[in-house]
Length: 115
Length: 117
Image (cartoon, rainbow over all chains, first blue to last red; front, side, top):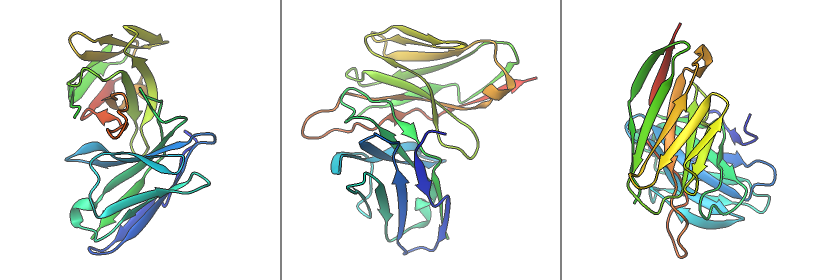
């Protein structure tokens, strides 16, 4: 158990809908990262928050957004969902801002199915 | 941006033998190289990592080597056991650049390691 929690475990929804995925980092970690894992694209970095502020952006679509709250939990919002958004979404956390590479610990993931 | 290539995509070894997985990266500024193990239905679990000021690191049956000049790093698992069966991912992380740049990890496509009894 990494100490990172994610809810829900599974989410099934329809195209065009909007969903929110939630992540709680390990105790003491200030950074939260979101990753998408799909069969064709592999594991891809989406976005990072550090202590409530957006820190870095990866391959995140404009339909996706995230935020980190004062209690350090984070939410990933996915809107106007398409079939191709079906994937596993992982949250990871680390202690610092990852300048030079911080160890990232991954949660168990949320499996999103868009029908 | 960074690009990480990982080989092989599938590796089958006899229990007790060694397994080697290799990765290359493109960004010479990358300085952190973790390896993750992912079992079915679970999130990636860190098994070992290495930073660019070190050439080799060992942890019991697992070792990682880094060749900065050639921009490649490898995972070595000795005395493989059935519980080593999983998908293994290498990753690379460049240093954060002020004003932008991803601190997220760039992952290889994964190696499905199968330990034959």
